Length: 132
Image (cartoon, rainbow, N blue to C red; front, side):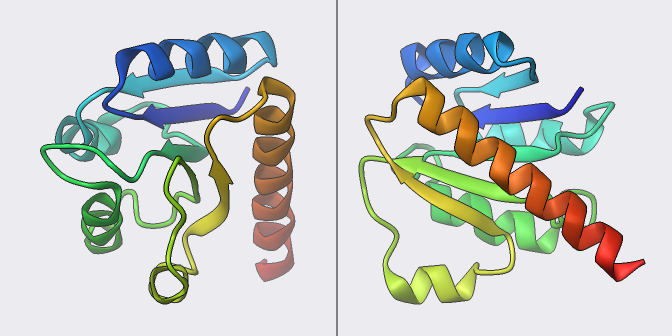
């Protein structure tokens, strides 16, 4: 079973996403503080297969999270789906392109979210198989 990390500073969003993902057969680990997520994700066992990430958070933003993720050898390969009310500017899409699997605008329908996650996971597994 794939594990999805949900990172959003709004506890109600985290709860809804967690329930949705559980319904669709995913395991979850959830964080309302992106700094805590950065410290905790390397210790997750098993590691998440994918991260759902909001952009507008504190104490660090989603973009700052992505910067720190790039530096971390233990989590830098985990694909990220940005789920935010804000769009990701083209220059940021380029800068983080290797790790960003998709960008979804809030609000998002649960079925659309699940479909996007499955597509990203399938793409990741196919890409990994192609590289071997």
